[in-house]
Image (cartoon, rainbow, N blue to C red; front, side):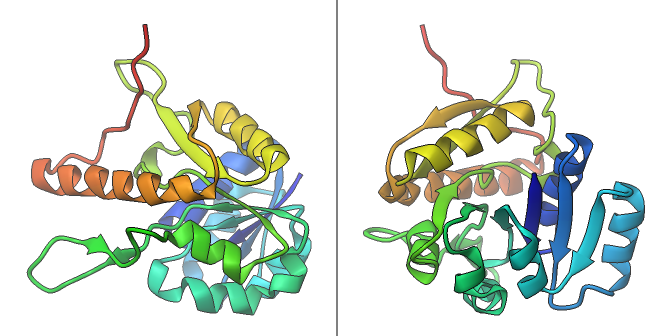
Length: 214
């Protein structure tokens, strides 16, 4: 499958490497596709990796991954072009974090809305699914924890799109917890903040969520 990464930071690069190692073709989309860290990522990822503008990555994609900082997400979506993503599955990895001086991060979107729902409104003809927003970039692919594989919470309105993303999560080494329609992102995104605040407090980012069952 051809994967268009919309966002070239640590999250985008980590997920991109995971896709390449599973045999997918990946185009890293960026406002500056020629910058040094993307060239270094391409060299590490190998022959199935390429780079381009956000618009080029969106056009290339059979499936897109939105992995931007929240402050630049709407602009990135517009640069990618909603028409280029129409009909495609878009995995939304964003967290709507608000960074404040001398205070821990907070959510810029919460309550009766979520970042994922906003992304779906910006991409009305795409099939948006929330995933991979509740873990550090270093553990996104093939996570290894003493308690066994952790769980990834996903949500979205399109059942076929969620089935595709669930399969990707499993290929990446995760259990999958489907929590329903896109409104469930109002719960999954605060869960990411729980993860972040705990990691800051304990100075340990080597953790992930698992839903225990009996």
